[in-house]
Image 1: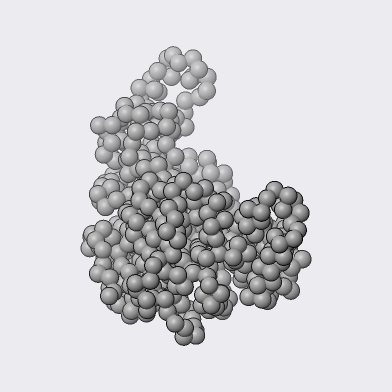
Image 2: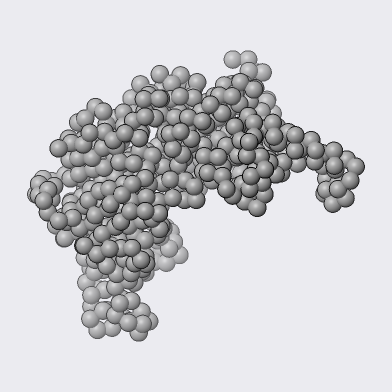
Length: 539
């Protein structure tokens, strides 16, 4: 490949955040005029890669060259002016401006107009403004928003805001346009329109790189793919080669085999009343549909998995149950109690616990203090004085809960006085789960318990979950490693684009060939349609 044909060249880039190796010696190139997809499971390093390329985060080693010149040491605004422009997962429109004015604002730097010109508003400034208005309309027409040029940007739908973000990027004079999850939260119609827009942009001479978790969407656009997993590039090449690569399939579906001791499954009693019942739950973030009329049940004593690609709505569902996000529709019943109007802290008092993705520990506090924070909701019910200095029954119950957690995770006992920020990844995950268990939950929700862990540590965490049910804990788990999740749980629901597309007994789902299609969604148009049609459930 000759030099002029390579527009972007990433060479041996590595980036570490503390003890996390986010990128590890990643190399690939982008050819002028192509559409390249950068894909990988949650935590693969995709966003870090975009941040390094765009100048937001420096690489520890390696270099990035754009049009033959090194750019990895330049500030983001300089990289932008060189012609490499990115959009973000959030459209971030200027809500007080019109659609056209949003695009005009993005073109000001390219126009060369200064602050003084703008303040005076005469002569050259007037000519520049007219040109910006004309150019803005052209860019809006490229993305199909020309008819909405003078509409307030705040009135646009989520899909239209994504298109506006693309128009703004084009207004900067982008030669290379980098799109960060452009299809996130969009419905099928909006994604179809976005596909047409990206193809039109490429025909007009702009090279496109995009990160996306909807692999059906990826399959309709990408001419080449680069796949990251745990910060390393595991595959690159033509779509057909990449989708058949065993390493890619393992990265998305998981390859950790979990040994689980046989136990009586709650799923054997299908008529048992549910501990948690979700009825047509919908959640929106602005105009984005995160959950679309999702219904599911979790019966007492079960371990239930929610699996699906990143962005499918799994974490949003857990947050809705915990009270961290407000539903836009549907109902939540916990032990036959309607959770509508019950604030987050009161839900913890009802014995609902969430161990969030990323652990959210207090790094400067000791392991002991992090655990005791998890008992807050129960101590709070005993009165304000108990919060200041627990005594009597409240103190005894707190100590008993602490002992149970330390018996369950003996490694934490050895580190009780150690700062949480100095723990290993596996120990940090044990602490996050232990803190949630301090609440003595009837329902324990785990968001990506194996995220960022070595296989042996991940296996240790997942194999501990059935022991929780022996203590009367019901588990609802989000897990990126689908294979492991289906091995350790009783039942599972598979989410795609905020909808349940399959459900059933975990072992039977694990053996179904169509689940790979529903989960990965490789096949373009067919996958896009499948994402909106439920797959037949296992009886």
